[in-house]
Length: 77
Image (cartoon, rainbow, N blue to C red; front, side, top):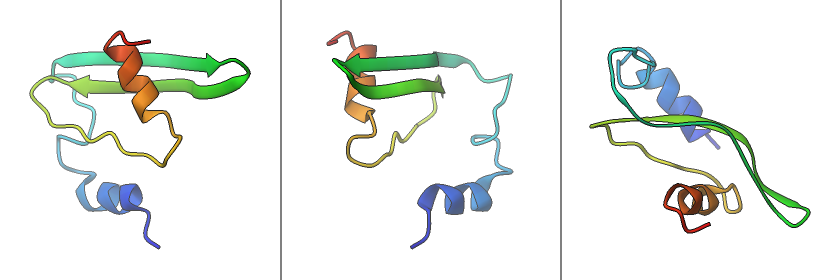
């Protein structure tokens, strides 16, 4: 089974929208975000940048913390 992220990076790594570009304006910058529910870790040191005027996909397996991350960002948690 092909890892979709590895395939995508190998195919588009030289395009400016995948390479971090200092000229682009950062809309959201998360560094070392962690979240625990009791003793269970939902997020561990998540760091990600979302750039303005760019479409970003937030992909992951079930239980990876996607919904938790968005709930924190939107103020639901």
